[in-house]
Image 1 (cartoon, helix red, strand yellow):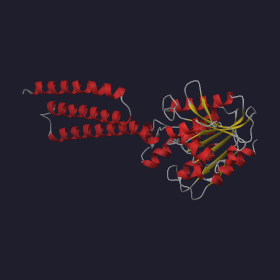
Image 2 (cartoon, helix red, strand yellow; image 1 turned 135 degrees about the horizontal axis):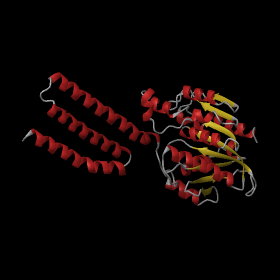
Image 3 (cartoon, helix red, strand yellow; image 1 turned 120 degrees about the vertical axis):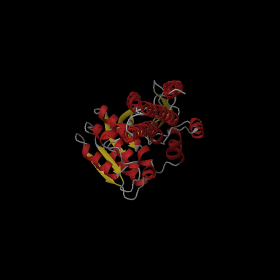
Length: 343
């Protein structure tokens, strides 16, 4: 076959395949999207190599090899970048809904199922000492990336309330699910999470029984709790952070330590807790552990130095791994004492 016709045939074939791939990329999600993008870039790289081979056939062999290598490395780097961008959400977020726990809680007189105007849903556990229509303090909780309100409320606040007794005795405890978690709707993006966090706070503030509101976050949720405390600085009475991070770069680098300089652009899900902390006004308490294998202790220490307008206390919890915080009775007792001192 004539080289010109061969070139035309391969380019047309690549374009024919690229069209459907592009459509699937735009409509797909997660790992499928990343795989399709990788395939598309590979096709384009192959077409580029073939074109170079065709039009530089008479050129020096070393020049051709250098060009082939450059195109191949560029394609591999592009595939790597796009794969990181598309797969990161799968590592950061683990949406789930525990139907058994939800059905069990629904059959009870308490807790109370609540819902915002845009479909953010979750549970309110009323303070044990409060009458039904009295104002009382509220803890608005933002959970970790694998936490869902129904299972948490059932296991820790209803089935066995001993760990959280100091928090739920005199305070309402409200846990609303992130978008796509539990029965919440919305977009699981940074903007979607920020909107959810502010909407949750505004909804809680509008409840007739809500007194002082304390934002409490664990792991992923510490960024959102701090964001709310910065955006609603005059209305948040206190901030409790369990295993917090200064920014999402620390979480990415803890898994693969390459996200520095220009490669920070690959971190598309960045909650910049340190930046939010600078405008927080309310008293804050931070709990962190040197043995935390998910959030580097140093990241929590750096966050501590970012609080400029609020009084902040840093508590080192020796021996705790990341998943130990939520079942640590002493930590919850200290958090309860912190809230009690502000009421």
